[in-house]
Length: 237
Picture 1 (cartoon, rainbow, N blue to C red):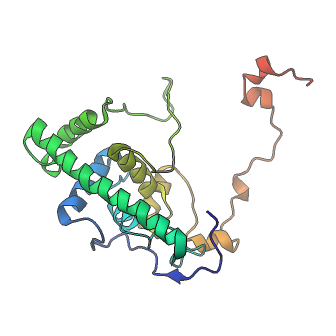
Picture 2 (spheres, rainbow, N blue to C red):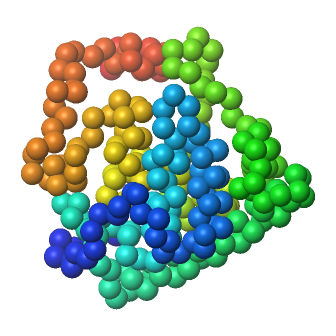
């Protein structure tokens, strides 16, 4: 979708410390906050709870007011017409997915441990997620490990995903998004991976933020960078 540069800008950047709920009930808010804290837990670095991922999710699925941040980070683009209608229909489905998903999460927690998800221990919550996802809990990944690490491509679009997969995606998005959306408080997500992001989106538009220094200007040997080329493509081709 192409966004018109002259669209009306409304609102302001989301306050990550806000406790105002635009969509979730108090129980739903607490449940999602606890759930995201197990998907991206706190250790020596802040996790989803500290980065205020729950605020990002609440604002995002509340309607169409927090979908597209303005290019200068001053607020959000106001959608109208068919674009607005399409997004309202899409967000209605997302709201239903979350509302029903939280009910199912609590029902599963009750069946396994006799309490709602927010009342369980961390280990119990992890076991609920194993049951819900149908997959084992991922093992810890440590930078510099000598053991091979396998991964998979992680999508960025939440259309037609299950509740668990949607929650995982939104947790990642809320942790690493531009802070204008309410998550990534104080750029916590960026700092954990060493990303020196812009102070605001405006800095990406006026040249204040520059990544030139991070580009390597030396000569690359593509046969060294991509070893399979050595077998598949002759060097003199």
